[in-house]
Image 1: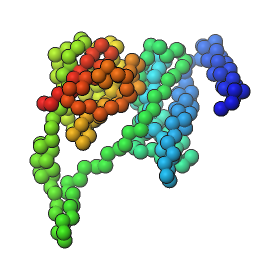
Image 2: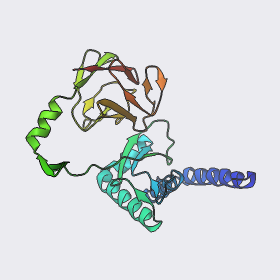
Image 3: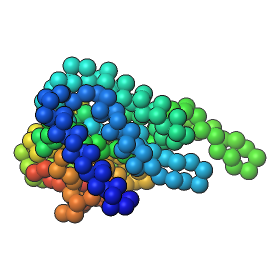
Image 4: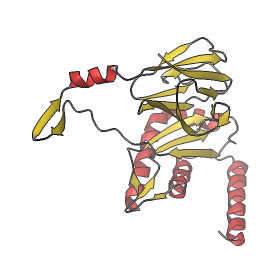
Length: 250
């Protein structure tokens, strides 16, 4: 991008913001859709035969804008997700899973403005009752009961809150994805006001735990280092806001 193009974009953004706020026009869903489409294109990943784009979008809004849009939050999220899906198909872009849009309140976002955080999250195939395994000339069917026995042999993990308003609480990790945050729908609910509504996500993978920041306002620290995603082993500590959680074997 040359200097002239950078200047043009700067003045265009400045003009748009001044115009929007000067006329008192509230944030419209179509503006959110346009910003999400730009984010999708900006975060393209070129592979051998496909171009991948994010399928999970976290939309940060000013409290006033969020309150106005919250009356139809779920319908709007579905509409925006469908829009992104069609936009990706039109441009022959690949999403690794079904698109999902979520809204987050952020005090630092100016009225009428929006901040988009996007990431890729693979969708899971439906669980199968049987799995075939080839051994010599014999097909062996592994049933659900056998798979459950194998699952019990895996190490189980827990998160212990060692600092913050919720110190002393313990959260047991289950198979699948679990979210830490202040929203009542989160799997691990915290009361720390510096924690975002949906702050980070945990998932067990290969006997380790993967933690991913969900575009939180204050970010995430692993053992004192700011990261967006990381694999954890027992003894590692996650800091979100004023809260510190230590991963331990259950």
